[in-house]
Length: 268
Image (tube, rainbow, N blue to C red; front, side):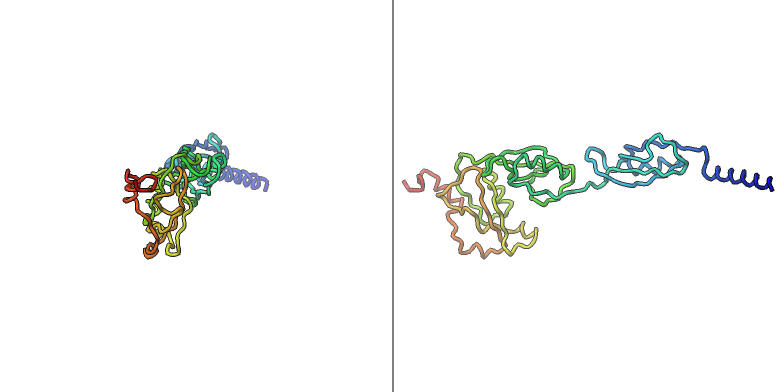
């Protein structure tokens, strides 16, 4: 009986040593910097497994590479052990542009990093507010609050620097699209103010097709604006709304009013 017990214990010991690979270890490689698609082929002869347990976003690193691992590189583990990996996101997360208009530069500079965005430059432009944000550019185009942007990307903020001394004619904006009206105002040193769409505009496509049927201040050839002031617009898809609107002399004729035939609005 004693012999049987001793032999049994010895056999079990040998079995468990074999099963648990007693005294056998594999050194964990350093996976940091590997793209996740390279790991499987790399581990073919390493007697190790892996599992992508998490992903985070780091704009300073290539997408899809390993940035953390557990156990750490150099650790000795049992053959067949799984290495848990954290990779940099393949698809970066995005955020909605927060409301920035009318905030001071300092407020915006402190606010933007909390959304995972950066400010690459600041453009100053005459405007009714001084040292406050009046617009945002992304990839060279003006964007509005709520626009979705990838985290880590940079924006340009347009900052008002007060009303300029130069006086400008009120431009004729009727029948222009919102984009065309904005471009015209910018080219003149004026700003786009409050924008409203009537009930004919129901979606983004409609807003692109809509045109100006009301502007404040209204177009005329007598009153003037100072550089940096804003004009409010109302847009529609209903061409009938242009009928009956008392439109004064359009731009093509306003140049005549500015010629030597007229001085201060009176014929010489």
